Length: 64
Image: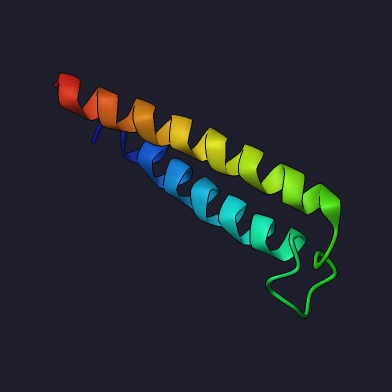
């Protein structure tokens, strides 16, 4: 079960980061986050952190 937590959190962070990015850029309407520049900046940062977590999770699973 090694790496499952990192994989799960990483995937969740990538999805949330992508949603925040498209909301911040104004592609998704109906939210207080729509067209807000801060979310267009934070979204990719969260997605990048998620990719790092995915990498660590995959790496720990391959080792064993």
